[in-house]
Length: 178
Image (cartoon, rainbow, N blue to C red):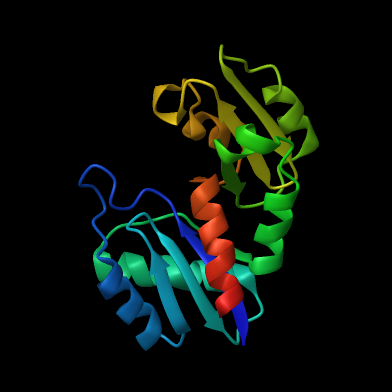
C-alpha cells in the first residue's frame, strides 16, 4: 500500500462547494481507498492505495467528487516523500518559514513560463518557485496580500493549491502514521 496526501482546491470556502469530510471519507473508502483520514474542512486527505499512478488517483478522486457532489474540484496528490522534499526545500527559514505558504503545483512549470512571472512583485510579499512549488511569504499576512493564485495558475499553465506551514507539518505527521 502506498500513502498519498490529497489536496483539494477551493472546497468549503465561503459556503461554496460544500463537501462534508465524513461523507468524503466514506465516498473514498467505498471506492477502494484505504485508511482515509481528513484534516480540517479545507480538502486535506491522507489515504492509502495500491495504485502507483498519481495521475490516475487524481483523476479518480476528481471524478468521484464530480459525480457525488456535483462540482469539479482540482485535485493534487503527493507522496509523503514529495511533500517532505517540498517542505525541506523551502528557501525561507525560521519565523519566515513558519509564516509562509506552500503553493503546490500539479506539475513543474516550463522554465520560460517561470521566467515570465519572476518580475511580479508586490510590496511586503515575496515568492520563490522551485520545481512544483511556489513558496510564498507576506509580511502583512496572507489575507491582506495581492498575491493571486489564479493568475499564477494561468501564467504557469498548472493547477495549484496552497497550504500554510502548520497544515503542511500536520499532513506530514499524518502521512507518517499511515
